[in-house]
Length: 239
Image (cartoon, rainbow, N blue to C red; front, side, top):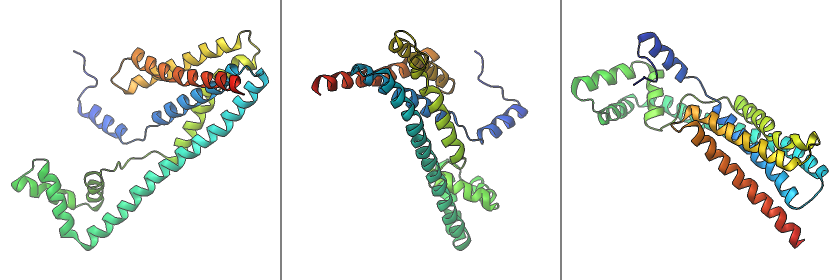
């Protein structure tokens, strides 16, 4: 059986260093799926209501820019909140360590004790961690508050979401912009390809196969599109 990675000293060092770098795949997937879903939902709703192609293009482009910016701003704010929370608890721990060092040492002792350390090994580990204030703080943030200490940049998170939203969300509009015959069928086909592609790409960071992950996102996206088409057709009948 092939191993996922080797365990040489150099390979382990490189892997651990890479693990401490922020990953923006989540933001790309988040923006890509939402951009495709919302734009095609607009297309499907308008087609279901049998409105003009001009309305498809106008509302589709307006959605790309306005909703894309809104998504990016929301992701920026959410990521910024995580950083603010981390810094708040870091300040708390710095104050506690400097004003109540023995109490904080006891917290480290009990945390390590629950992990199975005992006796002199436990005391040596406590001494090693508390001998360096930054290591002490990092340990408390992870173990006491269950906080991640490596966070994404709010600006890069927002930018990744916006870029993915625009790139993927523009696909359902391409057949209309180019004046294709049967533009809705082309839009549906291209949108399905984007949904499946995002899911297949996402599988690189999950335990599921590429076709299973692609199919899952495809079904989610088409379900949202089907709802939008149904709403459009229903409102056309009622109004």
